[in-house]
Length: 155
Image (spheres, rainbow, N blue to C red):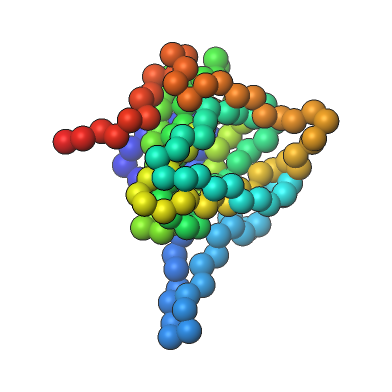
């Protein structure tokens, strides 16, 4: 990948292996460099044009794969001691671009459903969700603290 990534972010292209019965694709393996540990696995969906963000975690690393539809996933590095502080990364992922996206702790992230179909995002975080003390912190999608505009960029 030619563009610079936020420190700690990793992207792996995923390969669908087709045959006459359909196709198979490995999404995440414990022998890949992106793997740290397993917390849980869940799916979240996003309707077309809807923005879900911003949020971040203090302990948890997320691993996103968009399984259905397409999503624009945006990351913002707000970490004070990061060598990429202030950097924004934008990823278009889903049926037309299967990738595994590793999002480290304290990196703000959000996503928007793009196209005409609901986007389904599988997340494999390193931690289990603690209902009594969630490691989830939110700021508004249009916060002035994040230099990003979710609108479509024409041209």
